[in-house]
Amino acid sequence: MKRLLPSVLALVAATPALAATDRAAVIDTYADIAQAGYEDSLITARALQEAVAALVADPSEATLAAARTAWLAARDPYQQTEVYRFGNPIVDDWEGKVNAWPLDEGLIDYVDTSYAGPTDENELAAANVIANPALRIAGQEVDAGTITPALIADTLNEADGIETNVARGYHAIEFLLWGQDLNGTGPGAGDRPFTDYAQGEACTGGNCDRRADYLTAATDLLISDLEEMAANWAEEGAARAAITADPDAGLVAMLTGMGSLSYGEQAGERMRLGLMLNDPEEEHDCFSDNTHNSHYYDGKGVQNVYLGAYTRIDGSTVSGPSLRDLVAETAPELDAEMTAKLEATMQALGAIKTAAEGGMAYDQMLDPANAEGEALVMAGVDGLIDQTRSIERIVTALSLDSIAFEGSDSLDNPGAVFQ
Image (cartoon, rainbow, N blue to C red):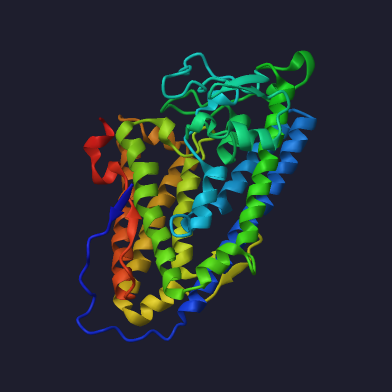
């Protein structure tokens, strides 16, 4: 859903002075940070691939724990790249391959008996590809006897045109590592046993060989998807070429990503909606209880783009002329406002992260009886909304075309959420 921003008054009556910072240089920094972020995402995904291979070769508590740890590590750099959505069509067209959610996990593997089966909306909601080498999709017989990246990408993902039939990406892998979180708003994440990957009589859940094949294929597919996007932001890459072609259009893309992620996507769909519904199924990393980190690093990505700096997984920094430099030269009061609001949002998201790491997982914060949890989530929502107002003002201060940011019924039309 698009939300057309209202017009805002100019920050000052006089025409702002021309900033000394080169707008093209700001876009170059933006592209450099994107390249570094996707490269880090690829590096950590390759570490995940190695951990998955070790789990499949020798299933144990230790190898499952190591694969889960690698998945968690892979999320941090990737979430910081989500700010490149919305303003960059190349990223938007690709993003659903790696981070689509929520998913009807019964398409992939066994689920608890309390899980809803096939519905009028999704006949494949409990198809269980791992247990069924022959499927019927959209009236056609499908041979799923050999689970490959191509089968997942071309046949299973969004099968029958249904968005929740998510068969690939981080969250499909997350489900295969953790299993369902059946704790509702109580403590505890998914608890898939390592024996779901054991061979012979030790196998639990059935079809352990096919489960291992699916996990391996899904991880391989994630690698190839991330390779594609890292290449798009490298020198001569298509995404870099598109964003650097017109500096003003590039600035619009930057601000579109910042505002749309802050407002409609994160404050609305990922945070406010789940709180309104008190539904842990609406949390982003729902199997692993890692949502606090996903929210934190989404916010960090917005801050990175404004400040023109990104800390890589090896501790080095990618930085250069920034959007902040442009704003500070044009409207210093607005820069101070934007910088402060970004920091306030990060403090609010950091408080959610601290509480989760201290024992109150994000899904527990969605419990209607948890006033402390609600306050933590709403502080994050309020911070994200507030910083979006300053992003609106930056668009005007830099004399850019007005922008249609992503919206959310949870923020713009709350009554529609319950219809």
